[in-house]
Image 1 (spheres, one colour):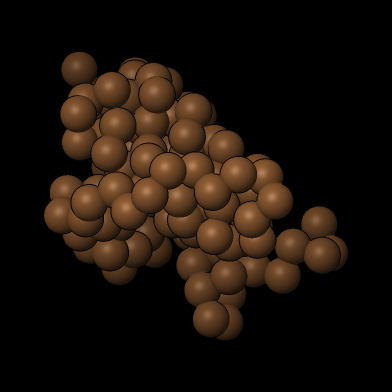
Image 2 (image 1 turned 60 degrees about the horizontal axis):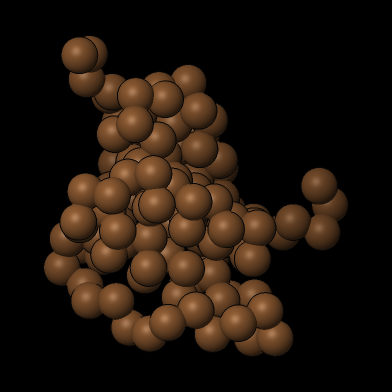
Amino acid sequence: MRRLRIPRGLRPLVGLVLLTVLGACSRSADPGPEAPPTLRARALIDSGNASYRREQFQDAAKRYASATLADPSDPAAYFGLGMALSKLGRDDDARRAYARARELARTPGGYADTTHH
């Protein structure tokens, strides 16, 4: 199997995400659709991280994808999605997710203004 290379522009984000994925505990269950988008996305990312740590990559990909829908401006959701898709052998999809994470991470404050998309 060919290794997926992490693009240079994403490398600073890699450390942050790996710390979250490998070291953090899942904080809580899904707060539900009535929760603010950033809180809902964070809970979904945490849940995806827990699935990723258990090597349940399909479940992790679903949770990260849901996080991208809850808060489309969160680069960590797209980066996690890229990691899970890569583990599933979906390298083209993973590259697109990584590219979106990189695009969002390059904006001031780390988040893109999604109102113009």
